[in-house]
Amino acid sequence: MPPKDARALPALDNQLDELEVAREKLVQERAGAERPAEDFQERIAKVKAQFDPANVEISIRRLIFKACNNSNEDAKQRLKSQNFLAKG
Image (tube, one colour):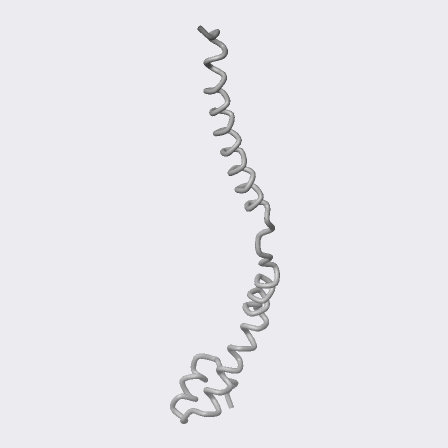
């Protein structure tokens, strides 16, 4: 009859194989997680430039200018009454 430790050896060998497979999966997952994330700095800068307060003000002024130059007198009077246009 083989010693008790000798019978446990194949079971431990199988368990070691399973642990090695699990370790390899974890190494692959970690390697995937360590890839640098997409750099959003350029996109953030574009959005900040797009919604810069000065740019928004310019856009609003252009809109008012176009509305004034392409509208009828009634519309111009409403813009003047809301202080969007210089009176005169």
